[in-house]
Length: 365
Ligand code: AMP
Image 1 (cartoon, rainbow, N blue to C red):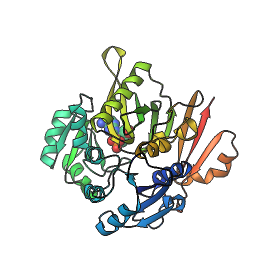
Image 2: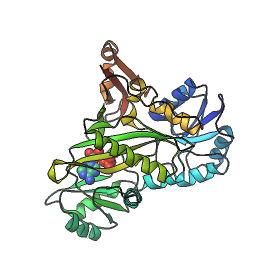
Image 3: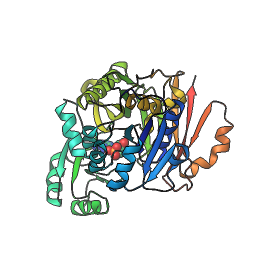
Image 4: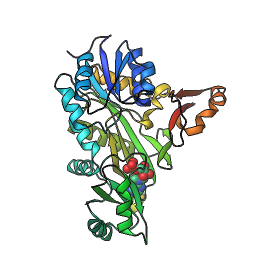
């Protein structure tokens, strides 16, 4: 398939959650078809796509059929197995490419990659057994955070190591997490704020960043995003420059998100440490739908279709996005009655606790 894609071309999306759903809606608005590939029969993205295929990410036969049905492939989550991507790449382009996945699937590789670009992160050490953990804690001090290298999200696979904590027990408790065999210890960052940059890079190297936004988490899950972040303009510019450096080093195509800690340096100045990157549209970019000229979902579709990027310009003085977690989404009638509130529901049947059910965006004039 030649890029730029023509309208009616089909975008393949690995993953059928809310991100896939919002990508499919954005693609449809632009006259593109989508086909979702996911193992779960009740995937929210199926409801709004042109078609879907239910299959395991390891099922090479199903993947080959999927590849033959689509003109380009993207994904809504970073834990796509590397083998899945290489099978697909035999017959179709996958964006963002394998380099971005390799880096973002492994916290150690990610930290080393950032360091190679001269981008600061929390202090870190690789930890493969309880002995290595004791040595790492002696070096980085307490509190520090033990994280599995792979498959961690929303605080899963993470343990805060406090004063007096039993290190052998801490290491063992990673045992329930997938990918537990290798971990990293991170020095605790006493951050002032957590911010993120959601940006896009197109096939010709064009780059556009949305406003740096500020994020608040509750129980390790994103609760509130406020754009723009209340940080000084030089810090915001630096955050965007770091994101551009990362995108260029990966020859990235699509939307990426970089989460950063704002820390205070000596003399009251602020500095930035990268926490992690996500090679996909991101929860902290949901405010762009309705809150910016182009949404992150449209921006991603444009980039992977070989189209030019749209304007990331924000509407209003500021924009706020709140996640609706679990039964918070039950207040939908009340939210609908609020002038100016923009409600999005993901169509998930069951509101389990901690599950992202929707979000509400408000433009602050
Ligand atoms: P992560 O899964 O790495 O995004 O971590 C989830 C959340 O834990 C972050 O958004 C921070 O609030 C907190 N956190 C992670 N790493 C650190 C760190 N090294 N120091 C302080 N807080 C952290």
